[in-house]
Length: 46
Image 1 (cartoon, one colour):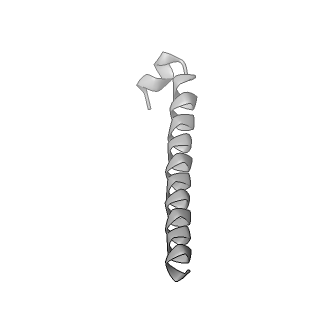
Image 2 (image 1 turned 90 degrees about the vertical axis):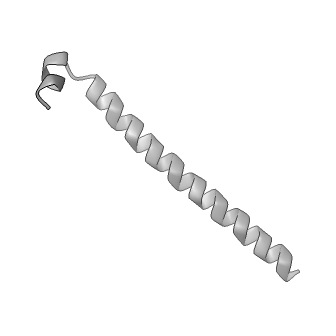
Image 3 (image 1 turned 180 degrees about the horizontal axis):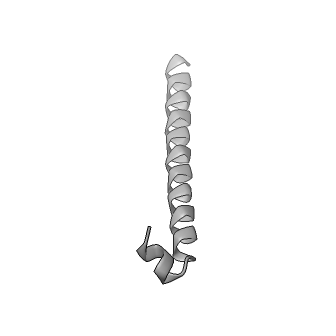
């Protein structure tokens, strides 16, 4: 039973890590989208 609990916590940690990665990716993509919406001349001077 202790092994089962350990396995469940390992799976939970893996899910939490994946969630954090997805959150980071989403923030990066959102930033890229905001920059892509700027006119080309504003992107030039950033």
